[in-house]
Each structure stands twice: as C-alpha cells, then as structure tokens.
Length: 108
Image (cartoon, rainbow, N blue to C red; front, side):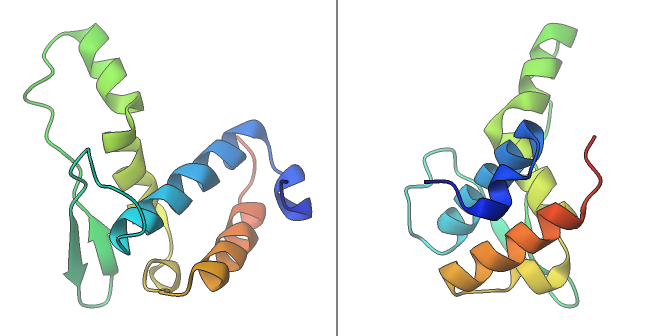
C-alpha cells in the first residue's frame, strides 16, 4: 500500500513522486526504457535527463500534450531534483529521500 508519508501528499505530488521513481528505474535499468529517455552525467549536477525537443509538435494542442507527456514531464521533474537525489543508486534509499524532498515542497 501507499507509504504513510505519501498519504500526506497532494495527488499532484504523489503523481510527481511516481514519475520520479519511474525515472530512477529507467536510469538504473530496472524497467524498460521504451520512450528512450536519455541521461547524461554532469559534474556538479549528477545524472541529468535530456528533455526531448519540441520540433515534432507544432500546433498549440500538440504542444500541451507534449508538455504533459511522460517523455517531457519525467526529465523536467528529474532535473528539478537536488543533485544529492539524482545520484543515489540504492532504491530504498532513493525512495525515502525522495519522499522527504516531496514533503518539503509547498503544495501547488
């Protein structure tokens, strides 16, 4: 079931946490990367995710779909995390630190 801490989060934060966990799994090859998310190691920033370019999406309607798609949301959220989070390689440690971080954010 959901962790006690995640119950305190808004639906939006829980969704973001889920996306970030999935990004972590992709980075550490714990799940298939069927949307071809790419990561680049950067000194002082850790593992940054590549945000795909928008050139394939022209119209405004397509643009909002693009912005909401996992391929874009995932990397944007991932890159917004602090450096000390995106370099954690242990899953349980990542989950607990991610939860702490999410709970420290003001709900929007």
